[in-house]
Image (cartoon, rainbow, N blue to C red; front, top):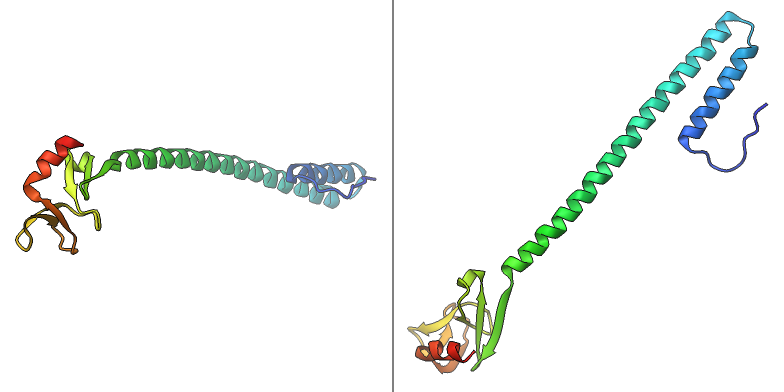
Length: 151
């Protein structure tokens, strides 16, 4: 008689035990009907085993694909951060930025809302926020070019 220990079996181990028990019983069976039934149990169990192998292989494939996607996503996020990165300096109370979106040139921005800064109708010669957030520099907008040379 087979002894089963209390510890958990893997599914493959359990299936092997079922097949072994059925074959053991089949070897002692006298009735043709019992033998046919036991052979059907063995056959069905082996079908389950084959299916289990397919599922495990599919799971491994899915995990590999997922790992590849995670790595690709991390690389794309790094590339995006790099593409969006800008040099930022505050000079004479004006924020200056240089990066891809400024064509690699230093440009003046509002230090309050980070929109472009320049001369506006409302504030005349003074550098101010072009998005009208309320920020106004004490500096003349015409001097922005000179300030960029000081950076």
